[in-house]
Image 1 (spheres, rainbow, N blue to C red):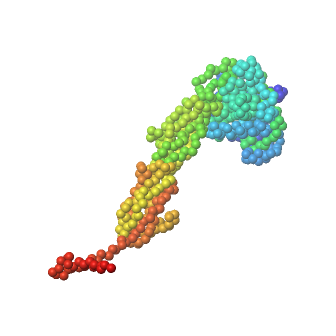
Image 2 (image 1 turned 90 degrees about the vertical axis):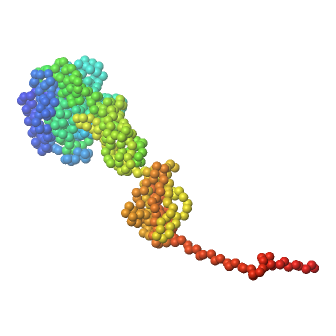
Length: 597
């Protein structure tokens, strides 16, 4: 493989020739060139922008000598232009992506989309960098777990044509205990891998030679410094943080544009290797472990333009250093492990409670750093939005909580307001590019599962009169008093309440007009409800009053309109009078003596 690696050309005639050939190739393919951000990438900062500073004298300007493949995309565009999500199943090995490598890129995109959705990382960008750095893991020569076999190693960074980076890992990753080397399909050097390494395949190891681990690490690396890769300027900065060369940016961009138009999957191990590496001039530049970036080719070729060197802890250029023989001392910028990366739900269940009651569930979030690990001491602001009257404990609509060592923050208890309806709780963290989560919540009306009349006395009124006895009911919920439950009272023709009645008993509204439905009734603190006075019209008969609670409990009560029965006066019998001149004894009948036999 070493035979394919040469030194990268410096600025000058050869570089111009390569650039001209690239432009000609793109023109011949009739494929639109990838759009670069207007003006110098990175807003004019040569280091951040990736301005070619190979010949500059100052420490921070040189890019180092980082070999990479300059092969451009095929002249024939993919079979399905504009439909990269529908990959054709056949095509040339040169244009295809090995199955495991393609799966790793797509998995990394999905993972980052979950943990850092505002970055908007496209898998095609990883594919473009993987193509330029290692020819898609040397044509997909990986084992069943996605690990390159044999390992992909760059040349020793011994200061001989490359940056001078002494060993940082004891040879654990690069088998070199003297100098560091770029490692794996995405060409991370050990010191950068120590900060950005990932375990994407769940085998318990962070292996730079594993395409799944390396692809996810590259994805997080590109998303550092709150970048939004859907913005051209941010994408340019991300690529240039990998290799600070505008030639490198153009090459990656051309492949990125190609893969966006479509590509196809090929079997592992059948991919072709690029044949046109970049090469630096024979003179040895002043190495400066600048922004080491993962860069690998079939043969070793790390450089300060790839994640490597002694990285400064700045999240915008993870693994950043300088190309001078002595690495720059660390700055006060936070390391990737200290940089807030994403905010996600920490298992919050459905938020639902009855009016006036406390929510059983509490809103919880999880903050992660730029590497995807839990991050503590992140301030998270929770806010209730809506008109249900729901508040956090203490009567607050907004509270701020800091994440603990496990990265989680839990909002205080929510207490539902008295108005039923929906509302939201938002959780916001971060300043430069805040991450926001929104939770939907519902307040349901107070309910009763049973309602019954408290008395048994018949309710009767005369036509045109009113019912002397008040109607009183008691509502319960799960055998407890149902306080504050809404009750509807309706005069109906049938027990099920399918038909309202327009005759018989009625209530009166505030203006004194007859109404036969009341919807503003509510049980008291004991679950009791005493109905307003009920009046009778002139139509006699037996009528039904149906009471229905929120929650579906109901009771039907009989009301009777009946005229009072008229009772006839009692007749008094005349008294017998005795004849004048007699005494009561004389008028009494005498006993008849029964003759003896």
